[in-house]
Image (cartoon, rainbow, N blue to C red; front, side, top):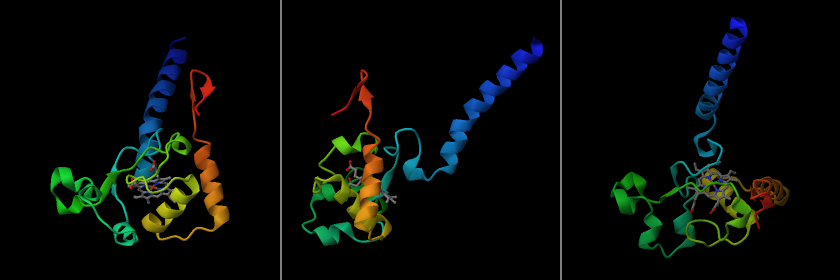
Length: 140
Ligand code: HEM
Protein backbone atom coordinates (compact mmCIF):
# COMPACT_ATOMS: atom_id res chain seq x y z
CA UNK A 1 0.00 0.00 0.00
CA UNK A 2 2.82 2.39 1.00
CA UNK A 3 4.58 1.57 -2.33
CA UNK A 4 1.39 2.40 -4.30
CA UNK A 5 1.04 5.80 -2.59
CA UNK A 6 4.71 6.60 -3.23
CA UNK A 7 4.33 5.54 -6.91
CA UNK A 8 1.27 7.76 -7.32
CA UNK A 9 3.07 10.70 -5.70
CA UNK A 10 5.99 10.24 -8.12
CA UNK A 11 3.62 10.26 -11.14
CA UNK A 12 1.93 13.46 -9.90
CA UNK A 13 5.30 15.21 -9.36
CA UNK A 14 6.65 14.14 -12.78
CA UNK A 15 3.47 15.23 -14.60
CA UNK A 16 3.69 18.60 -12.83
CA UNK A 17 7.27 19.03 -14.06
CA UNK A 18 6.60 18.00 -17.68
CA UNK A 19 4.55 21.05 -18.73
CA UNK A 20 7.04 23.74 -17.60
CA UNK A 21 9.94 21.73 -19.12
CA UNK A 22 8.14 21.47 -22.49
CA UNK A 23 7.44 25.19 -22.32
CA UNK A 24 11.16 25.85 -21.94
CA UNK A 25 12.17 23.83 -25.02
CA UNK A 26 9.45 25.07 -27.40
CA UNK A 27 10.19 28.24 -29.46
CA UNK A 28 9.15 31.32 -27.45
CA UNK A 29 6.52 32.39 -29.98
CA UNK A 30 4.57 29.12 -29.65
CA UNK A 31 4.89 28.51 -25.95
CA UNK A 32 1.99 27.52 -23.76
CA UNK A 33 -1.48 26.24 -24.41
CA UNK A 34 -2.68 29.55 -25.88
CA UNK A 35 -0.14 29.46 -28.76
CA UNK A 36 1.22 32.98 -28.49
CA UNK A 37 -0.05 36.00 -26.60
CA UNK A 38 2.91 35.91 -24.23
CA UNK A 39 5.61 38.11 -25.72
CA UNK A 40 6.24 41.30 -27.65
CA UNK A 41 8.05 40.77 -30.95
CA UNK A 42 9.28 42.99 -33.75
CA UNK A 43 6.86 43.33 -36.67
CA UNK A 44 9.02 43.11 -39.79
CA UNK A 45 11.77 40.88 -38.40
CA UNK A 46 13.21 39.87 -41.82
CA UNK A 47 11.72 42.44 -44.20
CA UNK A 48 10.70 46.02 -43.37
CA UNK A 49 6.91 45.80 -43.01
CA UNK A 50 6.36 49.51 -42.35
CA UNK A 51 8.58 50.72 -45.22
CA UNK A 52 6.59 48.47 -47.56
CA UNK A 53 3.17 49.49 -46.19
CA UNK A 54 4.00 53.22 -45.99
CA UNK A 55 2.29 56.12 -44.12
CA UNK A 56 3.75 55.26 -40.71
CA UNK A 57 1.62 56.63 -37.84
CA UNK A 58 2.42 57.05 -34.15
CA UNK A 59 0.56 53.82 -33.27
CA UNK A 60 2.87 51.88 -35.61
CA UNK A 61 5.71 52.38 -33.12
CA UNK A 62 4.00 49.90 -30.80
CA UNK A 63 5.65 49.15 -27.47
CA UNK A 64 8.04 52.10 -27.99
CA UNK A 65 5.13 54.47 -27.31
CA UNK A 66 5.00 53.11 -23.76
CA UNK A 67 8.67 52.44 -22.91
CA UNK A 68 10.39 55.14 -25.07
CA UNK A 69 13.19 52.60 -25.64
CA UNK A 70 14.44 52.48 -29.24
CA UNK A 71 14.73 48.67 -29.11
CA UNK A 72 10.92 48.51 -28.61
CA UNK A 73 10.03 50.43 -31.81
CA UNK A 74 7.59 48.37 -33.98
CA UNK A 75 7.28 45.67 -31.31
CA UNK A 76 3.77 44.31 -30.77
CA UNK A 77 2.16 41.66 -28.61
CA UNK A 78 2.16 38.34 -30.46
CA UNK A 79 -1.54 37.53 -30.69
CA UNK A 80 -2.80 34.15 -29.52
CA UNK A 81 -3.48 31.84 -32.47
CA UNK A 82 -6.38 30.17 -30.63
CA UNK A 83 -9.63 30.99 -32.49
CA UNK A 84 -7.57 33.03 -34.97
CA UNK A 85 -9.88 32.01 -37.86
CA UNK A 86 -12.59 34.15 -36.21
CA UNK A 87 -10.54 37.19 -35.20
CA UNK A 88 -10.09 39.10 -38.46
CA UNK A 89 -9.13 41.74 -39.47
CA UNK A 90 -5.53 40.60 -38.93
CA UNK A 91 -2.37 42.36 -37.84
CA UNK A 92 -2.43 45.21 -35.39
CA UNK A 93 -3.18 47.68 -38.17
CA UNK A 94 -6.15 45.58 -39.39
CA UNK A 95 -4.93 45.63 -42.99
CA UNK A 96 -5.55 41.92 -43.73
CA UNK A 97 -9.03 40.36 -43.84
CA UNK A 98 -8.23 36.81 -44.89
CA UNK A 99 -6.39 34.21 -42.77
CA UNK A 100 -4.34 32.79 -45.68
CA UNK A 101 -3.16 36.31 -46.53
CA UNK A 102 -2.15 36.87 -42.86
CA UNK A 103 -0.08 33.66 -43.05
CA UNK A 104 1.53 34.75 -46.33
CA UNK A 105 2.35 38.23 -45.01
CA UNK A 106 3.68 36.91 -41.70
CA UNK A 107 5.88 34.30 -43.38
CA UNK A 108 7.27 36.97 -45.70
CA UNK A 109 7.97 39.73 -43.18
CA UNK A 110 8.80 37.62 -40.10
CA UNK A 111 10.65 34.70 -41.72
CA UNK A 112 11.61 35.96 -45.23
CA UNK A 113 9.85 32.97 -46.77
CA UNK A 114 7.65 33.17 -49.90
CA UNK A 115 5.14 30.40 -49.26
CA UNK A 116 3.53 28.52 -52.17
CA UNK A 117 -0.31 28.66 -52.30
CA UNK A 118 -0.56 25.01 -51.17
CA UNK A 119 1.67 25.77 -48.15
CA UNK A 120 -0.44 28.80 -47.23
CA UNK A 121 -3.57 26.64 -47.48
CA UNK A 122 -2.16 23.89 -45.24
CA UNK A 123 -1.00 26.35 -42.57
CA UNK A 124 -4.37 28.16 -42.72
CA UNK A 125 -6.18 24.79 -42.36
CA UNK A 126 -4.10 24.03 -39.28
CA UNK A 127 -4.91 27.46 -37.83
CA UNK A 128 -8.63 26.87 -38.54
CA UNK A 129 -8.40 23.70 -36.45
CA UNK A 130 -7.58 25.91 -33.44
CA UNK A 131 -11.16 27.20 -33.26
CA UNK A 132 -12.69 26.08 -29.98
CA UNK A 133 -16.07 25.58 -28.35
CA UNK A 134 -18.01 27.54 -25.78
CA UNK A 135 -20.65 25.81 -23.69
CA UNK A 136 -20.28 22.70 -25.89
CA UNK A 137 -21.04 24.63 -29.10
CA UNK A 138 -18.44 25.48 -31.82
CA UNK A 139 -17.51 29.18 -31.86
CA UNK A 140 -18.68 31.04 -34.95
C1 HEM B 1 5.24 30.80 -40.50
C2 HEM B 1 5.28 31.15 -39.22
C3 HEM B 1 4.23 32.08 -38.64
C4 HEM B 1 2.88 32.04 -38.76
C5 HEM B 1 2.03 31.02 -39.53
C6 HEM B 1 2.36 33.16 -38.03
C7 HEM B 1 1.02 33.48 -37.93
C8 HEM B 1 0.55 34.72 -37.54
C9 HEM B 1 -0.78 35.23 -37.78
C10 HEM B 1 -1.92 34.48 -38.49
C11 HEM B 1 -0.81 36.48 -37.27
C12 HEM B 1 -2.01 37.43 -37.27
C13 HEM B 1 -2.82 37.20 -36.04
C14 HEM B 1 -3.76 38.34 -35.73
O1 HEM B 1 -3.60 39.46 -36.21
O2 HEM B 1 -4.71 38.09 -34.95
C15 HEM B 1 0.49 36.77 -36.70
C16 HEM B 1 0.84 37.94 -36.10
C17 HEM B 1 2.05 38.19 -35.50
N1 HEM B 1 3.13 37.34 -35.47
FE1 HEM B 1 3.25 35.54 -36.33
N2 HEM B 1 3.40 33.85 -37.46
C18 HEM B 1 4.57 33.25 -37.81
C19 HEM B 1 5.85 33.61 -37.46
C20 HEM B 1 6.15 34.64 -36.58
C21 HEM B 1 7.47 34.97 -36.09
C22 HEM B 1 8.75 34.21 -36.45
C23 HEM B 1 7.33 36.05 -35.27
C24 HEM B 1 8.37 36.81 -34.50
C25 HEM B 1 9.22 36.23 -33.67
C26 HEM B 1 5.94 36.42 -35.26
C27 HEM B 1 5.40 37.47 -34.56
C28 HEM B 1 4.15 37.97 -34.80
C29 HEM B 1 3.70 39.29 -34.35
C30 HEM B 1 4.50 40.33 -33.54
C31 HEM B 1 2.39 39.43 -34.80
C32 HEM B 1 1.50 40.65 -34.61
C33 HEM B 1 1.77 41.62 -35.76
C34 HEM B 1 0.78 42.75 -35.77
O3 HEM B 1 -0.19 42.72 -35.02
O4 HEM B 1 0.98 43.68 -36.56
N3 HEM B 1 5.25 35.53 -36.05
N4 HEM B 1 1.29 35.67 -36.86
